[in-house]
Image (cartoon, rainbow, N blue to C red):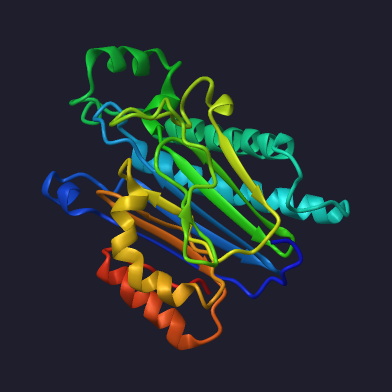
Length: 287
């Protein structure tokens, strides 16, 4: 609904090690982050790959979040310096943002490998195929594979960038949940596209909206996340519908949550935080 006035937005992000990973002595493979400047809120979540072949996926997810926040902030700032819209009319500009994210991510990966080459203990559970790949030095990025969702809200609207599985779920003002980013048919069960794919730039998907709906873009680890999550969100939705909120949240075997929302009262923010904690999504409000 064009013409709406944007309220002040808040966001928070937090990641925790999941119970199954604690039992298996695996590090948290998910990452989340947020950035706020002027009237701009940016949030990102990345879900590392669970296979033992992706030996540094926990680092890769952190690198992806960092790259996304930095690249999107640079895009918004450059647009404003040139008196252009911070929310583009087509995906062409977002493709350039995705290329920037990939470039920044690959730089962090290569720097990490250069500073700390793969160690024998890291490769102990890796398949022979991947051991040979990593030994060649030509497939370092595979070790850091991860998915990524990032959302940016400005006074002109909002946009989202997504690669891999998971869902971005939008909460409309009437309480309806929908998925604004198209689903990737290449993602099925435990198979997903990844930022480490050689053709990753072709696998990014996007959403561009010029309004400010009450929304929850959601990052989830199940295929039917809307149906699964709707009942758990029922109480929160009833509160959010009257608050014009935009939120993103990700929950997986590890926990990583990010949210942004314009709320008018401290009570409402506390209510959301309590409800998320009940759902197993730890969170912290941004500074």
